[in-house]
Image 1: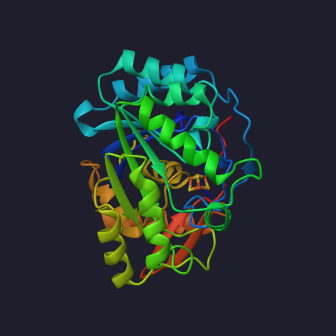
Image 2 (image 1 turned 45 degrees about the vertical axis):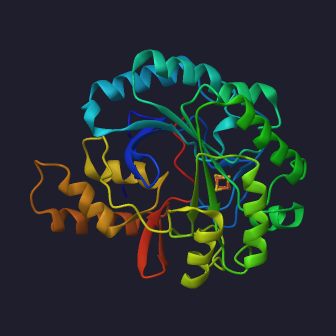
Length: 325
Ligand code: SF4
């Protein structure tokens, strides 16, 4: 059985991103820690449901790891550093300090991917505003749809969260990307898309992205809407496409390819073709197909790894990511 002995507990990637290019990831929170449990979440159902911010890792520790990581790769390999979390990164108490310090040790932009739930808190808005790009999701139009799609903790309500988005836009001069995930039967009628579009207008995002659940979702019943509706939604929302899987290269500084794959799928589902692309990126490897078959065999024998048939393809993922504490 393969298991991860990676020296890197927080920094991962590089992972291809549809919105950000080649992204070097930082996950400052453990084990699917979130205050939502979105039906479409590619990490599976939320394990640690909390809205309490915590100092899960020392900022010093993360910065030390990041320095080591970026010193061992070529800076041309990544476009951006993304704080993404195995859940909701604003739950990390050191977020503001972390962003500030990342900017002192390197010059690439910093992005944060958040569910926007804590934007009601001025302190968190101030911290997020230190980033260059903030990516927020916005899939619902009222309390009821919010509960059905995003399944937040009881204490988080739709209208306060929305007000937080409006406040944040007023205070933040950087780039806001808003992502709307369209799920069949939940928010894919013309009426619901129009309601979402009306609300988005007052947030003034720089770009709206329309996504569909292209990766295995937390709930098996989640389905991709019909193509006709996806096109209509894109038109109504004036949205850019995100409803495809990225074709960029996954990379890792972990020297053992098996461990590297295991590290990546703890945070990001991979297909067999992604594993092949990853191996091809390792210029010294030969017999790529043979190594891929060996890795796939090990993944299938690893009880922590799920192999999920979804759409026309199969993905490997660890639903409760490996804890590196
Ligand atoms: S999609 Fe994001 S916000 Fe939703 S449950 Fe997953 S990690 Fe949390």
